[in-house]
Structure formats: C-alpha cells, structure tokens
Amino acid sequence: MSRTARIERVTKETKVLVELDLDGTGVGEISTGVGFYDHMLNQIAKHGGFDLRVQTVGDLEIDAHHTVEDTALALGAAFAEALGDKAGVTRYGHAQVPLDEVLASAVVDLSGRPYVVHDEPANIAPHIGGNYPTSLTRHIWESFGHSARVTLHVSILRAGRHGAQPDAHHIVEAQFKAVARALRQACAIDPRNAGAVPSTKGAL
Image 1: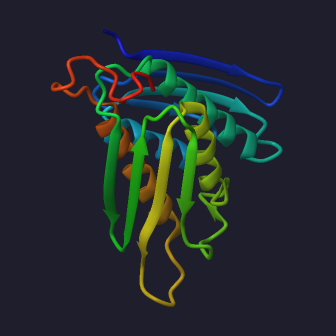
Image 2: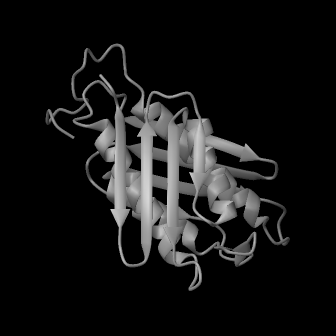
C-alpha cells in the first residue's frame, strides 16, 4: 500500500505544496525562502527516511512567521494523510540525538490526540541565518503536532557549558533530527502487528 500524500495549502499569505512518501529513501527537495528552515526540513527527510518535497511562497516581505507556520501545518497534514488509518504502524517512537554539546530528545505517539510539549533554553539567540526567528521553533512543533494529530514531546536535555550562551543553531537542528528519528520509528510498519491498528480501541 502506498503511504504517500500531496497537500496544497493556499491562503492570502502563503501558497504551500507538500509531497510526502513515508517509505522513501530520505530525499528532500525543500524551498521555503527561509534558508535555515529549508535546512531543518531536509533533516526531517534525511533522518526520517522520508521522501519530502516542500515548495512554499510566502509574504516574507512582512516576516517569516506565516511561511514557517503554514509550511508546518501542511507538513503535519501530509503525515496525517499518508498514515491513513495507521494500520500496522509501530505507533510510538523516541530518539535522543547529540549535536556536539547539545543533546535533544523527541518522543512521538501517533495517537490521533494532538498534544505538544516543548522545552528549550530561553536565552538562545533570537535569529539564525538572518530570517529564521528562533521563537518559531516551538510554534513549528505545535502547528505540526496538531495538524498531524500526534502527541509530541521535544526537549533539550543538554545545551552546553554552564554560564555560556547556548548555540542556537545546534539546539534547533538537534530537535529536528531527534523528531525525524522518532517519526521514522513511529511510522515504520511493525512486522509483528499483522496490519492491525496498534490500539486497544481499534482506532487511532
């Protein structure tokens, strides 16, 4: 069964196209106009083992908020569509990913119940790469989690040396890599599950 999705989201602020194959080979083709965000979404593709194409045109003349948010919403919708009724999936996934001095944790449940918990240092630099506001990282996970209808916990367990300003690039990138690995595990087909929905309810 093909586990793919194509989502088009068009508003007065953005035009987003997301194409996703859960059983791909980690190929990413990303263009949002926000360079660092492109780099992060490529982490989702590469470390999740998903084929992912994202094309977003947004009102970057205002700021990056609408572009980043609407892309995350469309990405979440793509996961929800590609997973379908979630029959046969592993359901739960977790990962801890180091990036030099930073250690990130991500735990996901394809629960059908949107809930997001996010914890990162408060004193990181406000921007990365000029037009990526680091305050949007939490909003990305909230938008993605609610649109994908998953439970998602993302935390920074270590952020560097005590008293030194954390490296914002490492903190955000480690989160994306950890979420990718957790999603890879959760979305994988469990060969012992015989195609059943992994819930005592019989539905997710």
